[in-house]
Length: 499
Image (cartoon, rainbow, N blue to C red; front, side):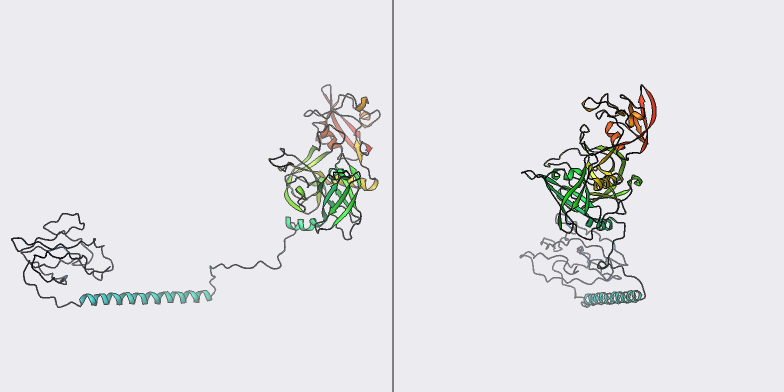
């Protein structure tokens, strides 16, 4: 801020005699000139010196010209910093500042009409101080520039000597990026070429059908899937199988097992180079193992989802549990997302081996604006050990074989075991004479509470456990009769085909 003209002078009254303006005198810190005794001094804002810090000057106020009175001595000018301040006869003391003699006393103002004092000889001093200040600033800038240049040179030299830079630059992804074996992406890439989407159409005029999933079982062109995926096309309908590369092939049903919900198809013109998916061991699966499901949920082919094994030996009936055509399984439960269209697709472990066939989901019901219910994280898969046995039987004979105990159990009650009914269907005996249950000593009214190592709480649970075995297997049965618990060993029989 300029130190000249701190205030703007107000023109004097025209009636007053003209007096040339008095130039300010340069104060001296050591010997300030005394003010005349007959006129008070007017407070002015001092000019700053070369000191590095100076208190901020008050807002400048316009000087008022004195009005002539009987006494030629003018009244003192007000010293207040605000236009509303009341003038006083004595100027306000200036605040003290750092440095000796600062601020200097204000220059004396001569009495009205008195001769002007001679002009001070040293008018160029402020310019010399300004020039000195500019020179000092320039010198400081040069010094600072020199210091900065020196530091930059030193840093550059240090950088050349091995100090790493903190600047991060974007780079390109490696051209030969490879996913490690065992990752979901690697497993999916290996399995997807062997997973197919199945389109089933009935032989009726409406051409109704659906979409499901299957996987390559062998190089001869056999495809394993769910029975309910192909059931609509089993009698006079058509089936087509589409691979991930977009190629489609016609297929026909080799065999179906309604109770197991397993079916086997065969491509009519199987291409060469088919890669069957490896089969794992569902008996060795542990709760918490990673799972990968591949299928066509809602028609979206080649969809991959992941999860874990949430539970094992989960008794699941695909229907209401009251009909002979219902499917029963001692299922693997997974939280991998499974939806309509995933049915028949493989459930893989972390190595890419098939451990189950996705078959059913538990749902809260259809959502708003949806015609089908979706996944809530409760999916169920047929254990591959069971599915493998069924598939081999269907390829060999075209008909399923079921292990049985030779007794009819109540399918409605739950919670206290599987109760042997009082009679079988059509009034037949509930325990087949000379059958497996009869030979083990079981009777109508007995409540089966254990089958092998598994607890039984209902008829569907018992059937699900029986069908995990093969005909001829011997299994220990725990049952209750008249409040007493007993055990027996039963040798499973067999039944061929769906009744």
